[in-house]
Length: 149
Image 1 (cartoon, rainbow, N blue to C red):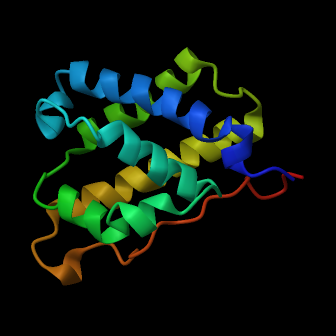
Image 2: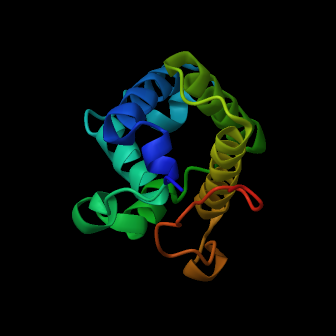
Image 3: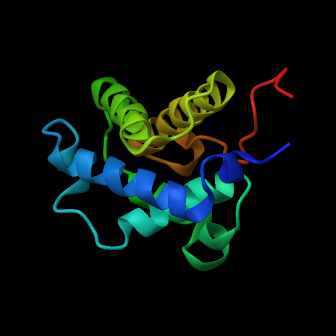
């Protein structure tokens, strides 16, 4: 079975997805304060992270600071539940906008991935100490939903 990375169109497909998604974050009044004016490298980081998570190259871990970098950038942001939910909505809307595959197993994996990731980010954004961080310390590997073949 193909990886989620391959199914999503590889690097090009994910980069197009993350480009549209990131633009929507910067334009959203609820989320823009978390991202400021944006960073020119953010789409590349989002693409590399998602690619690695979905079974693609491990560029994010090898060359972009890995999961420790994610912990650092989310610390002290104090992400609210409303912001977390909006992030998920915009993520799924961007998938529709760019024409990510619409099959139910892929969409379920996509939703579970962003739901999990936003919960980890939200917890880490409120952590005052390392003990309060989510226990995840490496880029998670996401796969097809159970029962998919």
